[in-house]
Amino acid sequence: MDTTLVEKYSRPTPRYTSYPTAPHFHNAITGEHYRDWLTSLSPGDTISLYTHIPYCDRLCWFCGCATKQTNRYHPVERYLTALKQEIASVGELVDAGCPVTAVHFGGGSPTMLEPADMIDLGRTLRQHFNVTPDAEISVEMDPNDLTEAKYDALAAIGVTRASLGVQDFDIRVQRAINREQSFEQTRAVVEAMRKRNVRSVNLDMLYGLPHQNLETIKDTADQVLSLQPDRIALFGYAHVPWMKKHQQMIDEAKLPGSLERYEQANLAAALFQAHGYQRIGIDHFARSDDTLAGAHQDGTLHRNFQGYTDDDAKALIGLGASSIGKLPQGYVQNSVPTADYQRRVESGLATVRGLTFSQEDRMRGWLIERLMCDFAFSSQQLIDRFGSSADPLLREAKSLLADDTDGLVEETDGHYRLTETGRPFVRSIAAKFDPYFSKGIARHSVSV
Ligand SMILES: C[S@@+](CC[C@H](N)C(=O)[O-])C[C@H]1O[C@@H](n2cnc3c(N)ncnc32)[C@H](O)[C@@H]1O
Ligand code: SF4
Image (cartoon, rainbow, N blue to C red):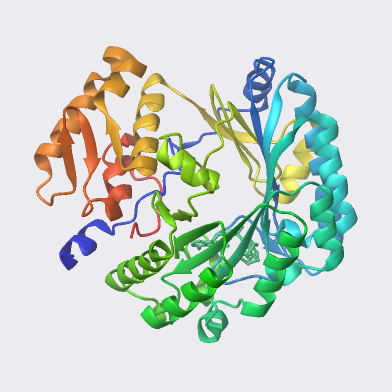
């Protein structure tokens, strides 16, 4: 690998978990829009629910999630009251004939809820939405939080997929990010969930953290593999201390540079692939019998705020503070501060911003999603979907190819594909099709 390419393309760019990206949402989209969009869903339209718990009982300094630490449970109880109110209000607007095929509990740490509250939350969702018996129920778990009663509560609400944060098992790295968590502790959680018939386990690992080097990456990757997860997410540490003040606790002098990050990502990926995991998109790995691998093979992989998914529901409904929903008409986002969210929910919906899709947004969004999922797109598919309005985009694709002096993109019969050299830089290539990006209103993490 030419090191100058890594330097050249590791510029900050969006992760494209949505298009247009969240910094471009605006406050002209209100609860009134959301109400209209929800009521226009028809019986049979499938729904995926995302429920956000913005609390943790610890604060990891690397964390980029929408969460806050609390040592008292009272604020969590107050939040849950509002969340259940929102579930009831939104559920009332959605046709009872819309099947919910997936429910995701994210955070923060949903596992910091008391067992009785977890069960109550699961029950409330089922009361107000038509959750199908075979729905995928997934939960983000902090391995530090768990007790037998919590495992049982997760089993009682029907969890089918467990996602555990590992990050790195090296104690020096863990101390530098304020997240101590032993391998044994993590293994105990994996075993407890499998004992309760959770059919899929995902482990999150990070590279680019302070003190990480090829040795710590190899050791952690080996330990991760020894737990035989069904999926692994390998994220590059996004250092954005201007947005997440607690990241200022991280010693920047100890952070690996862009070339080291690139080598760490490659080493972990090679180890996972050598153990039979399929590489999926920019940061996921899955065993070949996992549904994510199936979706990857048949070109039906999607990208959403949780990363890569095989979930193809027509609407994503976000519940809780900061949650984002995606409906056929556009995006909506709830208020982020929990106090404001709670106040809004008392009198209606908590929507504070969003975006209505233009035809151009849909077209560019489709192309960027295919690039992020398949590292490829075809001109014919663009024309089939969008007709002649795709012409300007096809011209942009041609000029991308003509200007590509680094061998990142190739084309045969209108089928554009990133080369092996180009794949690590897919975020930068996607950004070339994103006119909002050049307006530069947001700062992002480095792309490699
Ligand atoms: C909501 S968090 C974690 C769930 C759970 N609270 C835990 O810590 O185990 C989901 C994942 O996002 C990833 N993540 C958090 N902050 C990040 C950052 N700054 N850069 C990259 N990935 C990050 C971590 O891998 C984390 O496990
Ligand atoms: S990484 Fe998980 S436990 Fe740590 S602060 Fe973030 S959400 Fe909370």
